[in-house]
Amino acid sequence: MISLSLARHVALVLALASGALSSAQAQAGTAPAATGLAADLLTDIAQLESKMLGLARAIPTDRYDWRPGTGVRSISEVLRHVAADNYLLPVLLGHAAPAATGITADFKSAQAFEQRPLDRDQTIAQLERSFAHVKGALTGTAPARMSDKVTLFGQPASVQYTWVLTATHLHEHLGQLIAYARSNNVVPPWSK
Image (cartoon, rainbow, N blue to C red; front, side, top):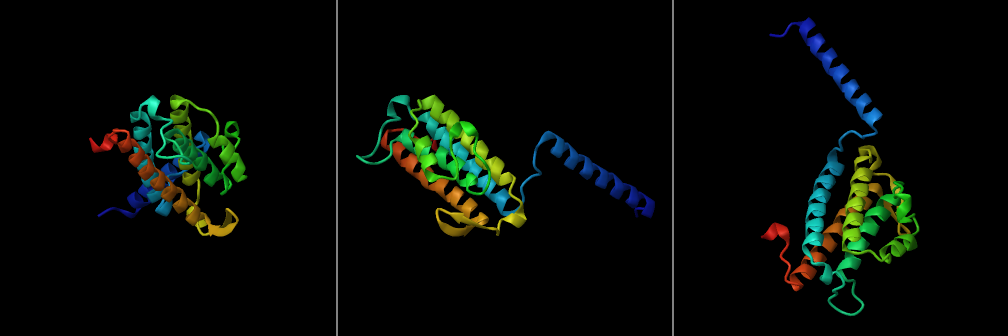
């Protein structure tokens, strides 16, 4: 049986450690770990990031301009679209995109980003940076804020809905890229 003084001592040590951790996180500029829905979405987005970047690296440079038909995005255009929306959707929730992207809350700024001529390596690098932006913004979203109301593409929505939309958008384009890759005889790296 633990004595009352030992229990108080342990409680004090835990409280001090917790305070030190919060202070260290504040000094380092890091947010505490996400919880609840944000934590689940972060896990999902990290898996999507791994698969999407794996595919982007597995597809040969000479296939980046391939498209399944006229008027449909090419492989490169899909990857740039994903990167653009990885910046845009958090921007709509108040998480500014890096200035170099030029992306603001105006949808046209994301469209302009998508049209930038980038080679394969630049596209992959931009995709990596965009995933870091999404994950940082989601990590910084307090659970209490999830039910806050926002306007999303002119429609009422919640912060939570916007984050779920972010993940489902990534799933949609991962499926598209899998089909594009297989149409070009590229096996997704995780399927080998």
